[in-house]
Length: 444
Image (cartoon, rainbow, N blue to C red; front, side, top):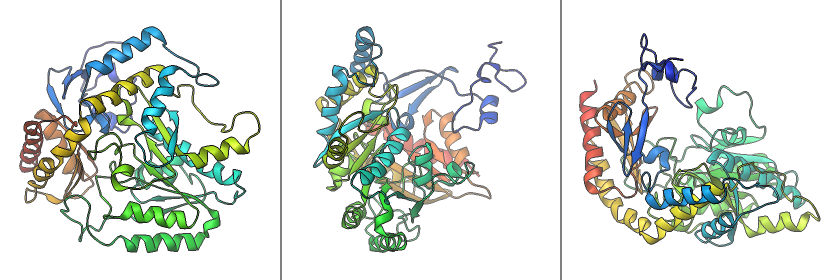
């Protein structure tokens, strides 16, 4: 097949590849091809230098091609390219499990490795249902998610997730799921800095009503994100997660917290559970675990759950679940290197110190054309852009304008999301925001 970059507005070379979450017809007409990455920048095949103000896809928290991570992957590839994940382990995966567990509160001390946030979510949901069954409460099969929640794209994750386009094409999904309301009031909470100080009790009353409706003896788990990242950077009220823990615990329901985005520095802390003083039953992680360099995710699990599986199964596999690439040697080596960088280079502390500056910068966009709301938490910002007639008919041109001027941010519908690399300078934050400002002013 010809590698000629264009032919009648199409790109023959990219034709065979079906891109995920992408308007493929539009992409083929104007392909974006990243040729290399370094530090805080991508470099496109067309010669453009692109400031990565979205950390890849929420995952490249340390920037790109960090020398310590690159070296770790190369060394591991020369030593162990692949190790079977069933009935075998290797040194790096044991060490990484300990390093990860040490960062989470309480007895969240066992780590089940997978390859993505989607797999981590489905793993957590299966663990929850099986845990109750092993305890003699097999009626607990119902799962409760949240409107606009995102837990990956497995059937379990989209069943408890609440993003309409991720669900509507795929039939009835898992039976026995329900959803909490989106915990954000667009009137009261608009332009909030950090966590809204609105009352979270109405959301707890709603959860209690759902529990009463279904009866707690039928509910296995509630799963939420600390903030809705892929849903547009929407932040629940202060105290929401802690009260959610109290209500679920009262009824014997497991709490699963999806920290695929929030773990490893995005909030200026190792994770949201530690930051907010909450001990979930299961936490799902991925992305920043190894800086997005090799696919990896995990479920971090409370000791009581692990012990129940171990004690209830006299012989054979205690949990009939896993993946060929669980705990892959290259992913584990990259994870150990990334975790070492987080610790030795003071990344979380630097991110924490940068949050006030980032907050002021993002909120400086208030009053710009088409901006109807701004939100921030940690080093994550969301800007809602008023549509003309159709979803994203202004937000997409704003993101495209920023891209054309050398800054990569992402819009999901009408919400523009900003997620700077944790090592950004104030100059790079300024450039990001000023490029968005210019894009807003240039958009009709």
